[in-house]
Image (cartoon, rainbow, N blue to C red; front, side, top):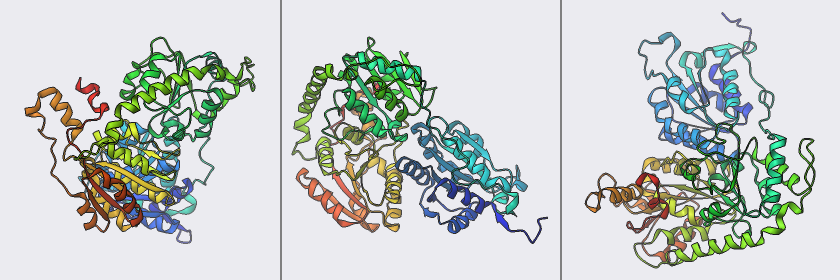
Length: 571
């Protein structure tokens, strides 16, 4: 029995103290009897509690919060269906390398294997889709295990962790002196690995000698906050840059080294291709879209990603910012790396690449001119290219753009250009629909000074759209657009291609839902648009409303994005 004279603390309050030490400012949750002591601790620690209508939203919001802030997100859900509802959000964070902690409830230890309410083997279920999954065995260990989970979130490439806490462990009180409460800044090492110096120097030499280099700046450029280092490299060494995932916005639109539509041409003709923080997955054709004659270099936080699916000439494991900065210094003759003398280069070979950049700019312009009629189309129903072109024109340097959908977001990926780093959010390689509303929630809560603009497919919005009410309840205004074709059009295209027109509508056709009315019903701003000339004014009115908004734009259901038509699963 504890000494009554000692100060006592509950498991929930220990969890809250550990969250506070990590810098967590908000938890996303759907309430349940197993977890309420965490809420009580969060109130004492000044951590905001945002309650949502579905646990998938809580998990996606924690993922989104991590992407925006660079700090880990946290979702807290109850046992059983509360935890299983959150599985999709955790899986999405796992594939997207997003550091978040999901805390799930569990039945009391004293009822273990007795069939307690909502009892499931959560840890077994979460282990394959997390970097760390465990049960908190004792109240005194609660804070310690939260800090352990956060350490794992940031080891190598970031990712999610999971902790389940039995109800009796969470509610029990122990003497404060018996519990380890990690202190902020004192329980995690730096994860900014600089990469092998010899390999860094080798890449510098390859760059200096290359006549037609190209670099792809992937999500890890933003994850590691390497924007400055990436910009310095491409400008100093005169290297054309392509961006994907969260790496979009590293260079602003109009920058002479910013390229978007000529990537396939570049990767077919380059003599040196540098892939930063992007795996050779389906988005890269598993590496087969790179010229077999090019020298290929891969930089990644995770050694398991380097050289996976495709042989490479050089692989470097480490922090993108540290590595790119060192490469720039070495290639431009500013000194060697790690004691390795630098080969003196003439400005890193930058001067000999003008013709190469002009060649790529011509390919870029050709692609733009090919789709220009669609971008300016006055047709009704509205062509998706016209819609995403209007959205691109609407964005400011302070607009965070979120894409949630299939075909409509594929259109936007070719046109929408975020104007600042960290201002693009999409699901990532798991391709999860339904991230839009929770990402809006996280982005606007974490960065209230920013405008948030979200494009939804009508199918994607339907998955988590009820939490539009949560955005209203917490006064989180944003500009939302639903590209409404009453279909799951990306799937419809594949069915049409595979089975013919008579079977193209099986299982993929949605009702003609007036999402603008839905928004107004829940206390937000809503408008319907059928004429392309009305898109811009409607966007501006949504911005000026100061409310969560949905502009329901009726788009042509028979227009498909090139990326949809080129998907390998339909070939």
